[in-house]
Image 1: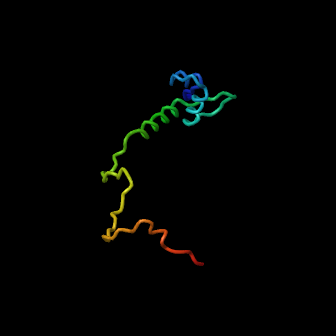
Image 2: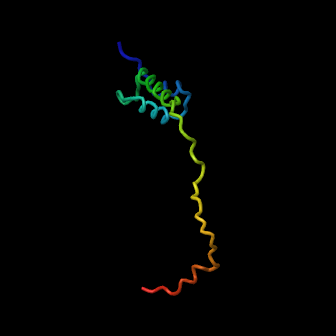
Length: 97
């Protein structure tokens, strides 16, 4: 008994597609191959591919963790009580080598 094979037209009809390239991509992802110049895929392989895609979309139960910070965390400023005078960066004098 031979497994049921689907061609590009059958895959187009199954998924309601219009683009043959999209159907070929699905067939390639599912393990399709070429027989006598015609692209085909086994129905069982296509169904297994669908199940694998469904399983990948199911949410996994992740461990509970702390919420992530939404922005950049700032370091607390070290205050010495002194204010820098205006233009303090200009008062360093000439640079020497």
